[in-house]
Length: 44
Image (tube, rainbow, N blue to C red; front, top):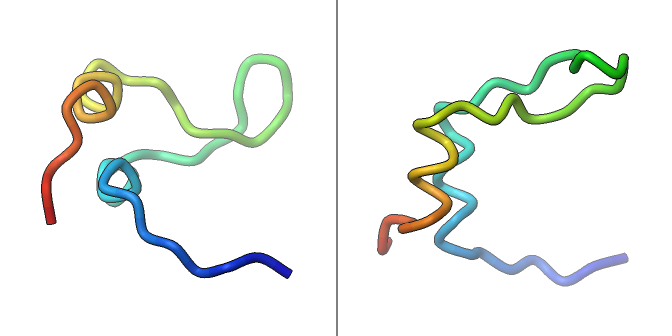
């Protein structure tokens, strides 16, 4: 069990794509947009 916490960088994943990666595992595709958002997450 974990606590339910919100972090600003979680908002970056709203538009991100989770898909099978080149290594065969499922994960977030690191696009320029996602990387930039994670560097300066929106304040909500």
